[in-house]
Length: 310
Length: 318
View 1 (cartoon, rainbow over the protein chains, first blue to last red):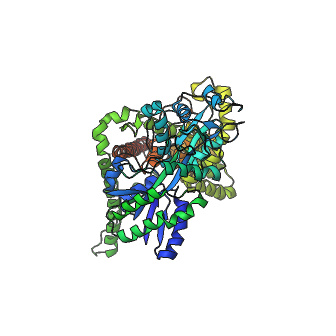
View 2 (view 1 turned 180 degrees about the vertical axis):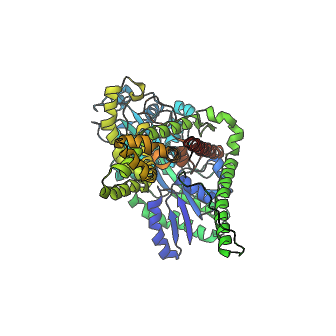
View 3 (view 1 turned 135 degrees about the horizontal axis):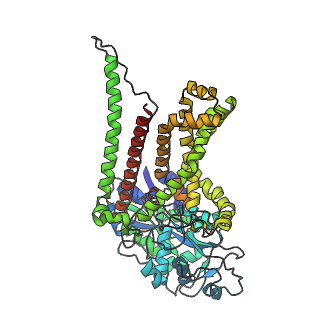
């Protein structure tokens, strides 16, 4: 038996793996979707066999985890959502404009910068109310990493973090809290994991990518981003935000979600078998649930990482 | 806490050794010691966890309002402010209502209403705070934003307290949730207190021609004032420490807004929302520092309550 805890984003996928892997390998997987931060704490304490997090470990977290490897094992995306009375779905926005809204430089929805991106849309003068996560979050990490990549102003004033120090707006706990706050606030703009858009019938903004296109965040546009960037950083994470212009159809706020595993584990053999299943056979469940399959280059580098566990 | 009779009953000395007495003494003593040890261990552990933040920021932590996990700068000023404002505001709203409920249930309500209404009030205390928080987000917050806050804003907007934009999260919604949590605690204790006033006294006052209100003001309230203070402090402790519902309702932002429609944050709420998955080691330690501040607040509140209770008792000569 293997136990895991963490990310809620990857949970729909893991819940498919649980029965399937039990039938195929006879190993029961028990996973608690307690949130990425909780997953990191649990694996650091070795209370579970594997953790799962949407943000890679920070350097302090990596030190505390004492020899953990992070294995990208599923793809997802963070989506900008909004609620403005009289404005329909799929408003077009760019990273720098969203950054200005979260920095307090753009304060009303009929700002010329938003108007210029959306000719023909009748924008009211409603006040912009940014909504962000008050708890540590992978979505906050993806969102602030993306804005830091495209807006020097955002990078110097706020920066990339799982808990960015936003200067304006209101905080809400978890994706569900942000979704509720967006729904109940006229003029709100916020960010949620992609699955919450459909689940809560939220508006999704279309973000301009480096190629100047506005791809809808979905399996295809996330896959396009993943195919464009397959080289891992030194810590094993892969940065998918703001992919190069050569990937014309790539959604610019795509992300990997990671399995976090101790390098030496008493259950190394079982763990290695399960992780190998997750990145190969397990991926077949993905597309139906909104998870594009991993690019083959990432599967290959994951296999090397998995082999290093003992 | 306050109504027990402080007289020791002198037991006749017996030559025979009683195993039951010894067992009682050991079990009761061990329970008391266990509580003390638990408190000391918690205080030690929290201080130990906070030591990195204590040495990095010292007492400057209390006067800084920076909270930035990117630059690793942390301070508690805005959170202390938020905790104090929400708790005091909730007490101001809750205490009169709660004492009125206590009086109603013990003195005024028809006898057959007392049990069901009393049970309902106590049931309110049993609602888990996360449920109250959800109800706050989905129902009370939007209601306040749509009806109460615009009314306050339109009629009293010239007072800075009621200026600003109505919002479904912020100080006012958080205070309302806290009020709902504090009321049943104070109400059920004050009901017990009023019930404990000897009926001879009440009957005597009424027989001397005082009205019911005069009896309450002149006899019942002075009799139980020490207990009422203790009840209020218990309510305060509840408000100070409430994390989940407040973190859902207050907006989770730093700052000390001048309007009650603004967002803020409290010590306990920040602890609840950020402890899991804190990004840096210093942040974890700073969160423990917040816990330490909260612990000191609660101890000070409790000690001052005991002090006040003692002083009132002395004055009343009971």
